[in-house]
Length: 360
Image (cartoon, rainbow, N blue to C red; front, side, top):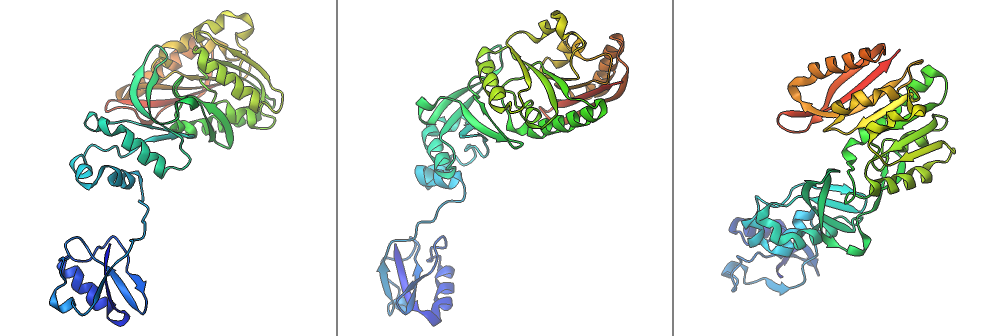
């Protein structure tokens, strides 16, 4: 890198002059050079110094390494400024980080740069060890198809996450997990605490579609809150990790039941009928359809609570609320409070809805 060495007291004068000509490299800082100052020169500076600058020395020195502020800065270095600018509209601007994993979607125009994108993400995110390309949801379990584009294949997809003060394992290559729903899960804890205060005893809880157990983790860690947990998921690979998470965090020796079957069959076991104080139902694309076979799990004799989540047309909020009210009435439940409200947008026409029903 070329630098122009000028007297310290004249630094500002010559800096302004070089800037006016486009001859100063403005991404680099002015350096101390003996009793003077070394001003970095851009590639536009002539090979032979102009007459008015000929009295000053021009030196070669290594420019300081400046770390980019984001992964795109690293990417620009890897692919070169020309290529970066050519595909500027297609580079991914956001990604999901889950523990040591980063999951990113790529436009087809830049898929050929998947390796460079992965390396740039690993350079920027020191805690990340694997980068996966999201190829969309597939299969009966609606799992994201993930293609490893950076990091070791030996590590697989499992990673430890920390959410709401609790650590547990997830594997997005085997089942669904979203850190963006952490607030919803914290609200479930707050709801459970209120229910315990009303019942004046520990709670019996059922999570019919538990996944890796993120909704149960803050509940099981809350001292004196839970009497028993019944956790179910249809995906056997997920259920294995669910079992590990529950056992690892069960410091109060809460009674655990963990099953792997269609949740709609849970009501066929007599010991489940009317047994649970808190029922969690999170199967967003099918929640409303499955509710009629699930609410019989709720306690009839005391106050009980359903917390559920569903994806519905944004215009159907009132209709779905009425549908749920009629369902509970038909099962001889008396409702003291019902909430059906949009938690966030899912698509241009659909919303992700939170449902909460308290019975008397």
